[in-house]
Length: 192
Image (cartoon, rainbow, N blue to C red; front, side, top):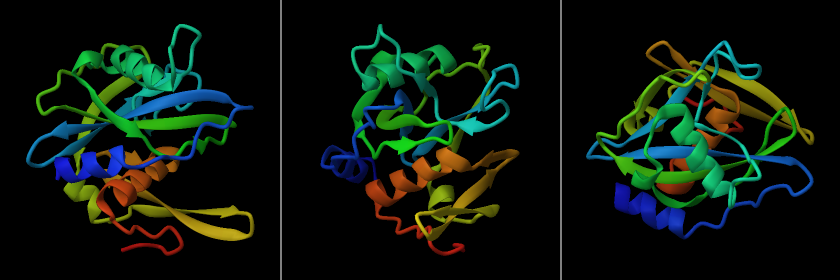
């Protein structure tokens, strides 16, 4: 499965960042294992925005960053303790615009199965992993209806243990599954 994902992501040229907006990047970290998992974080309630929400590790672009890939790696290491030298970046997915008008570029990276994570960041309450097999079932906890340009979309929210993956994080998760694994998760229907 990792080989297929690597081939799909390396051959994908995603939608670029929106130049006139502030920029951020996140890391969609995938464990290199027989049963690959995605790594998510639960944001601390101590942070100003997105407190208590599930997200991919990442954050805002800073002047010290060489590029958005560096932003994703730097922020992931700061938030989760994940050693950025152990991340094999495959490439970016489509940039999305958050409800706060921030251009967010997700980068897919492969990490060792036993990658060390911690919950020591002030920004993060916890780190957790979700098996791809669970996400591919597209068993939705709920659908959030989104109206854009006259179209209606049903953005899934997935519940894994006590965590709810929704919003922009769910959108990037679905993009990853559809691009990397041809999951064919349809956002114009309410799913399974």
